[in-house]
Length: 428
Ligand code: ACO
Image (cartoon, rainbow, N blue to C red; front, top):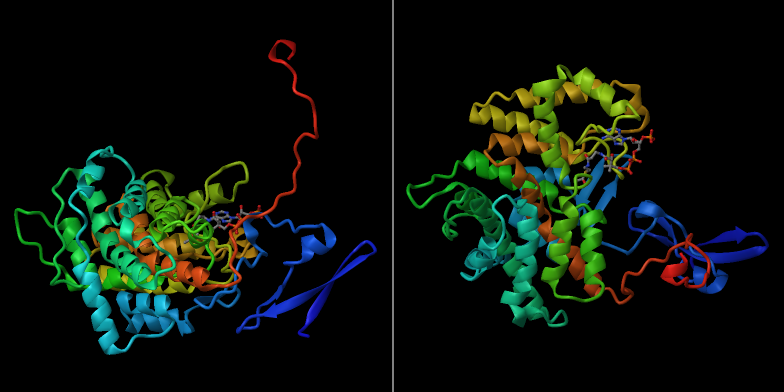
């Protein structure tokens, strides 16, 4: 018998087994709690709830550690590439060279989308947010590839995974082209993943488009840094939707929708809008921080704070250095970067932020890089989605391989009216 803990409630005692993870994190296994005691747990936002066992990503929020499959994010950001990291997440191990070449080739050959999908874009308003467009188009993939929907057939699942990885940049660039009324640019299979995306975003049929390798590398690094983050809101959404066993595309579409919100992936767009507002209206970083601290004001310092990181977000450290490096190499002077650094400096010496353990998160500096490399603000979160895709899929695969996985179905503590009799409308 392994370790146990005892939950005592009045005179009722209940022994629960402990589960210890490979990095020492300990959980109370309460699966039998309701059956044995009639009680459930209450944990809004799931801050204390382990919904699964997972071997994909390790985070220590107190120490600022992030590792994919055991590999520190700092090493991957410096030495790896996005497609290699995608393979690591999807398969559990770094690929051999021939495996990476084969995977890259497969991705490259599936970048085109079905011609009829363009009608789908045309039916959507031009000012639709590209995240909404991407969620719709990815959801529609199951209508274009109905043959790949058997989640129990690994060949079909792998084909669906390759299609998603290959087509999401094409779908995303299509959302941008649709919004500005330019013709879609077909993928160029002679280019690497990021260069191809940049060409589809910024190229036109009228003139050649040369990809700047500095920009392509910066984008690749950004995608690596966003590739997974264990059970965050969008990944949990992918798992939750996936638990009822619809096709993979449906789960990923749900993940895109969850990521869109300003408290999650949408924060990168909000950060730039905040910095631009400070530049335009606020006068100084101090004025803005005063508003962010005021309980009667709904203003938040966007890009600050994290449910898990209570020391620093290692991705923010890498991105701050990357932002400086990219701007320098592109010869861009950014007033927004200056404002961001000033905000960070002031916030980190302010008792409000220090006592609440609020530090810059991944979104604080990513938007500055996106802006410097020409990505429109409303596409920032879409870039996050492209980066997060292999993480979502890795969790989806893990869940489907887990024999203990069940349909996600939380309980509730009902606080509504007790039984009462229907009153006819004339008597109300
Ligand atoms: N600005 C000002 N105050 C903040 C901020 C912020 N950015 N973040 C948290 N606080 C305050 C809260 O008001 C609260 O104060 P109180 O104790 O006086 O009530 C305290 O810090 C704790 O914050 P919670 O909201 O309880 O923390 P939670 O873990 O629920 O939320 C979240 C985390 C959503 C990220 C939050 O910090 C936030 O809204 N940040 C801004 C949005 C953002 O940057 N989101 C991106 C997150 S990273 C990602 O998803 C990729």
